[in-house]
Image (tube, rainbow, N blue to C red; front, side, top):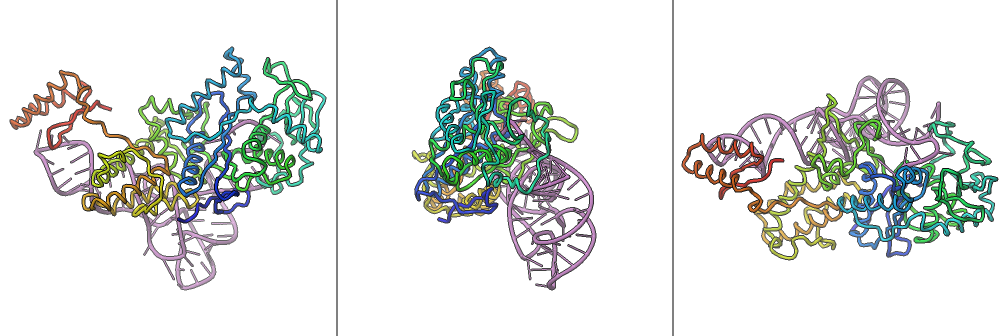
Amino acid sequence: MSALKLFDTMSREIREISPRDGKTFRFYCCGPTVYGPAHIGNFRTFVLQDVFRRVVELSGMEAFHVRNLTDVDDKTIRDSQGEGKTLTDFTNFWRDRFHEDCGRLNLLSPHVEPSAVEHIPHQIAMIEDLVSKGNAYASEDGSVYYKISSFESYGRLSRLDQRELKEGASGVMSDDEYDKDSASDFVLWKGRRDEDGENFWESPWGQGRPGWHLECSAMCREYLGDTFDLHSGGVDLVFPHHENEIAQSEACTGHTMADHWFHLTHLLVDGGKMSKSANNFYTLDQLAEKGFSAAELRYVLISASYRQSMNFVARDADGAETFPALLGARQALQKIARFERALAEKAGAADEDLEFETVKTFEDTGAFADAFAALQNDLNTPDCLGQIFSAMKTIKPAELDEGAALREWKGLRFVLEGLGLELPVEEEGAGGDVPENIRAMAEERLAAKQAKDWAAADRLRDEIAEAGWELKDTKEGYDLCPKS
RNA sequence: GGCGAGGUAGCCAAGUGGUAAGGCCGGGCUCUGCAAAAGCUCUAUCGCGGGUUCGAUUCCCGCCCUCGCCUCCA
């Protein structure tokens, strides 16, 4: 099987993925700050990281996946206080919500999910090390800062040397808040302030709390060692977060932090950034209320290259809410599901335990070989999807013998496993759930139809529709399902 | 201002130095009493202007436009 290739932000080239130890691919993904529901943009990142992990495993490597939870920062403290909850209760609530959403999206759980609060001693130890090595300094207010000028290669990941930072461009520069030597020095430890309330920890520099960048460095080192295979996150983390992580970790260990940097480009909504003020901020729950499943969202999120910003249309030209991508995803998913069922039945898999078994072993992907190859080629998920449909056109399940059908079925399941796509299951005749009166009307219509009394048949079908049920004729009789 | 990404059919979105995957929508056909569903099928010359080349959407130059980042951010 050919190898998995992926673009690396540091070297700016597509490189082959391989574990340093030759066996287990060890990687770290920056996880969510748990202070509210994650939105679909956050999930684009997590879903594609999940696809990446699946392809690593399907390519014959073992994976060791670490994804952190940021459970202490300005926002978590502020909002927990606002709700009158302890920081722990507050972040646990949102952590659980996050896990629920991940489950709905069919995301594989990371092997380790460390949280910042649980690793304060590790962070303090790292700061002490940095201070002793001259890479960090304590200020009078009890904070500790990283001295950027002490780390010569600072800025390599984001090409800092090739650009100039515009002071205050983000509008949140607040140098006066803390006492640091240089505006670009970043905080490792924040001295306790009144607004932190009871959220502080003891340290050699007094009471306070850890800075955001540090937690990842400390947890990476704890679970993955000085050097690991890959580090990942959204593009917005390239600078300063990942740049700062590199400075912290490499100054401490003296070794390259990660061999490969994997960054995911943002999801845009109606051509712009998602924000609450623009009213284009969507969560899984919001989409569920509008009738869209997590699987449909997952399909949409993988339908564009992770290296390209993706445009999620939520408004039409008149400003009315509309979700063409999700609607399209539903159709596409059903199309694949029908094909999969036809193949399974032909292969004799429908009645076997095989039915819902995932196929994780590469044997012979047959017509779907190109689809999997697309995934291995810099995680080209849209190409993969295209290849799936192309392959479907070349295969006529009815014309295959059992062996060939089984082979193609396994190939399809293998690729779907890589994408993490769960197919919609066809409702088994809603028989029991249909109310008596609806059932009676349907029977009456069937009789009218058989008597070729079309007028009566159509009238009854309309009445059934008015009652909220959709009736479709089939070979045997009819199907009833609730109107969507 | 600096850095980066991008402009491919109504929408979304791959890809390639030799006249462009796929999905949705729309049209047509088949099936059907009708409808729906399903199956089949049709629909682009790749922002604009130059250049290189036998040949460019794909390489180079210029221009126009869009978006993201610039120490909260997936």
